Image (cartoon, rainbow, N blue to C red; front, side):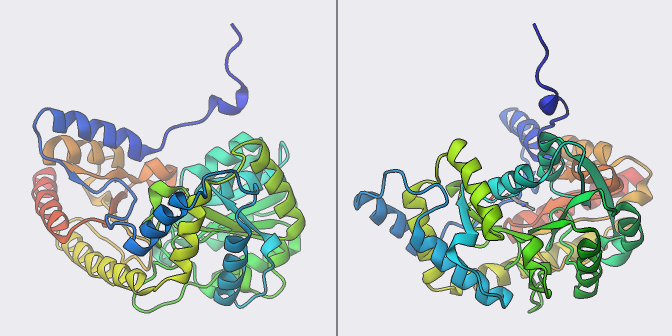
Length: 391
Ligand code: PMP
């Protein structure tokens, strides 16, 4: 039999799934595991949002809707995202999808031809490399450096970008580092993108999860950038709605039309009642978002202080998202060995930095979207583990 198509030959699973499977095996043996591997809010979806979905189902919103989404939600997102970015968006620029992931995949498929180069962050969200491979593009990873708060190494970026660059993927605040790209770096990247005629895909899924009262700058807001930008956002993180599958993409209208066709022929459309829940999420009170962000910040401060108190561990203060990315290079072992042994020997489920690219070597990713009690116990166990590793 012929082997599988070339485009799927390099695909790999997300590291979190493998660690989750191993954790469950250990739990089945009666071991207690502290879960810091899964990147999702531990909060429930706000009650008003759940009620809106139930009302929509009872009211019969259970049929197909247009592939690009329910018009009222597209209009609402155009207005709200426009306000956030200081830009004017029309509803026809907004495409709704089942989660933010289709908003990464489909614009990439619509833009990248075989052989086109795509710049993306290393370490970065694993879907970036996968979608570039599926589109037949050439992945060009650019390192993020701890020294610059995990923004791009701009020297490496300048060497990587050329007329062959079709697309630049940015993620701020970032998974897995929690880093935010400063405005000056965005200006630099924008200028180079314009020079070479590249598109920019700005993954802003953690855009509202920023700390210390900071606003996260968006490259799309810089002068003249929206004509070459795709903003990717969604409800998963901001409103604790990971399982609902609801996200959106904002881009120039002509590209939106192509993305809509890809949605038409793949997923058909996004669940109708889910979109009514999305309308309520945006229109309803926002105090729960504020409360969640305040709680994440409290947990961030806790986990970072705890990690930095362990001799040999160094953790930068993440500016957004809900991940800590401690440096464990001083132990002289690979991140994957440390992550594996942390799980097996200390019962702490964390991800190896290399699950996000080779440049994640020397780091671990810990998701702190979990209770302070779990964080405290994990820190205690990690402290004992690292002390014995250093001994
Ligand atoms: N982008 C990043 C950086 C993410 O971390 C995630 C979720 N882990 C997504 C996109 C996908 O979001 P969704 O679940 O809404 O598809």
